[in-house]
Length: 152
Image 1 (tube, rainbow, N blue to C red):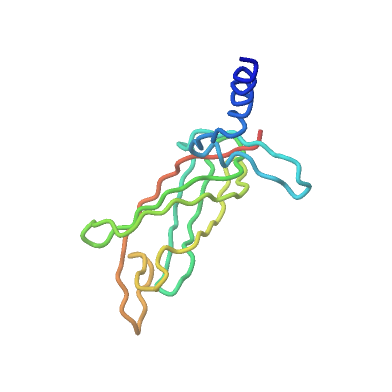
Image 2: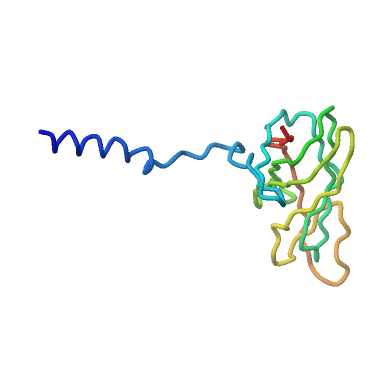
């Protein structure tokens, strides 16, 4: 009987160490280490006060560039963005999510770039200049801010 109780207690004590915690959304990105290896914590705030504009991606570019404007009264430390790419007939070509860690003070704008989804240089943003000597397919993009991080 003592042996059975010992086994039951040992199993109950070891279960929390073995149990896998479920990851939940952007909260997992709220921990970062700075240069001194001290933990900095971030809060997730409303994305409604962030605007993306000025998107550009010529055919030969390996990065997509755009501007992020912080319309809030709070400085931000990063944003989570989602892009959807469409052809001329509004058919979805691709969807990509990006986490961009960049300091954007309240009321200011920063130029940001992320790796391009078009690895073969076959597409260009429809408002960018088409290449003169090679064939390229124009596309449109929709962006959405999923979350915003600010320092605690």
